[in-house]
Amino acid sequence: MSDEEHHFESKADAGASKTYPQQAGTIRKNGYIVIKNRPCKVPNHPSPSVTLSARQVVVAPDLDLDLAAAAMVVEVSTSKTGKHGHAKCHFVAIDIFTGKKLEDIVPSSHNCDVPHVNRTEYQLIDISEDGFVSLLTENGNTKDDLRLPTDDTLLGQIKDGFGEGKDLVVTVMSAMGEEQICALKDIGPKN
Image (cartoon, rainbow, N blue to C red; front, side, top):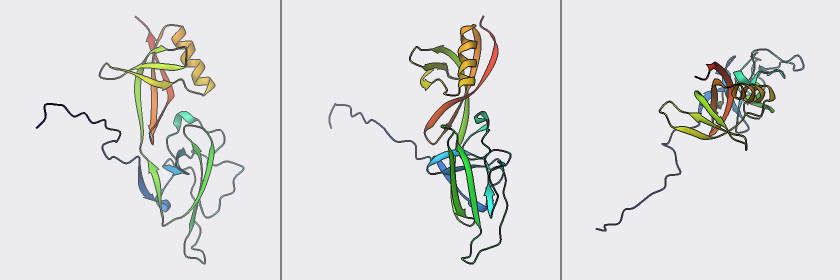
């Protein structure tokens, strides 16, 4: 045996999947879905510009991304089985990280991927000049790998509150290996 220590760099997770399967016909209002390998959300109200056909999920253009998390279903209507044997589900959703509109049509008996979406709150410690934030975790460590959000309203609220010396808690949404600040809470002035 050798006295040398062997070091292995792990680049894998513990085997947990980033998504789980769910039958397309069972995805309901406020559920989540993956479209084109992107986590998406479908809003709570149908878009006036989209006509429902078959079994459908529709997303509105004015979706509040603070509520988003991988694809939430808004409205579902079911068609009768067609001549090829399957009712279809038409999903229209918004990517929760980029805000882009995505669509997919799936037979209602087939499986769709649904992302695991987590929300975690961190206290804001600092904002760097290059657009990264320093956050305090529950165990007292810092998390320095997140950028400021791209949403102008949320970005302004974070910068203004931090500039005024307020104690801020940000909510970070994570899905499919991506993370983004999605909400802000003011817990009062710093002591």
